Every structure is written in C-alpha cells, then in structure tokens.
Length: 264
Image 1: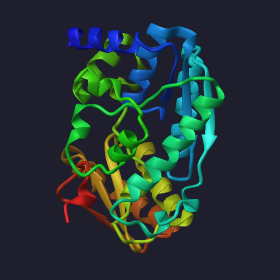
Image 2: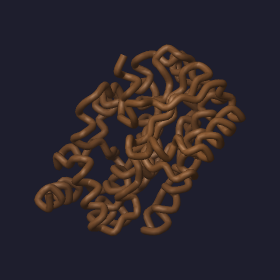
Image 3: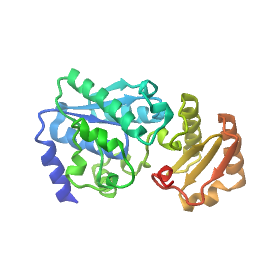
C-alpha cells in the first residue's frame, strides 16, 4: 500500500498546477490532501454546488479546506438546465457529470490551471457508471486509478494521514436514489435529502433512501435492522418521512448496497 502511495505522489509531482474536483467525500478528500502535500499552493479545490448534493456536503468540504489551508472555489451548476436530466434516462449520470466537469474545467482555466483531476478509484471500475465516460471524454485525470488504489486502501491511508474523512460513509449524488425514467424534481430531491439527514441524525452510518413514487425504500446495514425496527425509532422515521411528502415507508431486507437501482 505504501508503494501505491509513493506511486500516487510521483504521479502528482508531474503537474505544475492541478485543480481537484472536490466533493468532500473520502476519495476526493484523500486526493486533495495528497496533492496539496506534493504541490502546495499550486493545488486548487473546486467544489460544485447543485441541488443533487446535500448542503452538509458543501459545509464539510469548506471545513476541510479551511482546516488544511487549501484554496477552494465553488461553482454552481443547475442540473435542471441540462437537456434530458429531469427525465432521468439511463445515461443521466453522464449528462450531469459532463456538465459539472465542464464547469470545473472552466473554473480551473479562469485560475490559469491547465489540468483537472477527480477521485475515482479501482472499486469504481465495476457496476454501471456512465459518468466515467464523461470524465474520459473531457480529459480529466484520475490519479487514484493511476496508482491502482482501492477504497479500502484509501480509507487506511487517510487514517494514517489523520484525515477525519477516513471513516466517512460512502456517498453518491441524490439523483442516484431515483429509478431510471422516474422524473427528478427539486421537491423530490429535497424529500430524499431530508430523509437521509434524519437517518444520519439518528445514528445510522451507511444508508440510502431510494424513492419510488411516494414510497421511500430505506437501505441500512443488516446489523442495523434491529435498531431501525425499534418502536421509538420506527415511529419517528415514519412520522417524519410522511411530513417530507412520502406516503409509504419501507425497509429493504437486502440492506445497503451500492448501485441497487441498477439491479433491474
């Protein structure tokens, strides 16, 4: 693993300056800190503000940059101006990622930075990820892939570096909670954000709230099933979810897993 870390540092050292697409998640936080350690002030964090990302993620990204003295800029992207996005086709992630990466490229160019990097790792090679196509088309580099780092290795290296993000739950944009073909609206994105925020506040670590019409399908880790079904917790979840706009609340017996919307 240390050999991979050294390989990553050698890869990063080739850049005169570098902008990192920084969401505040485990992977981009590790990449940003590693790049800053190698390149110092020649690194820029670029964070996208959009309704598909929870507001807490933006707050955590800002706090991370403040902690380590990393220069950050925020650019706003309205996904509802992207043709086809709201209809939620199977290539939705490609459409959205392409627009967001173009905005990051434009922001980097304004700051006279030629190269942009993002935080995909070896585990992102599987499943259905059309957003990877947009990254490739736009010439965005993926240093963690170049170093062949897995998610588990990134967490371990983050822990060694003392990054608070090392044990942060994996996350994905809120649009990934919708069944393909089911329209995405700002109101329904807000429903999902509020529902997931409640579960976080109740102490659930790795979870998702998938939306199917007016039904919320909760995914938590199997070891947390019993806790979710405790009467006090269950009643609070049902009441609050209904106040957010859901008519039905269900627990997925398969538990949390990535890409569950791709299973069918």
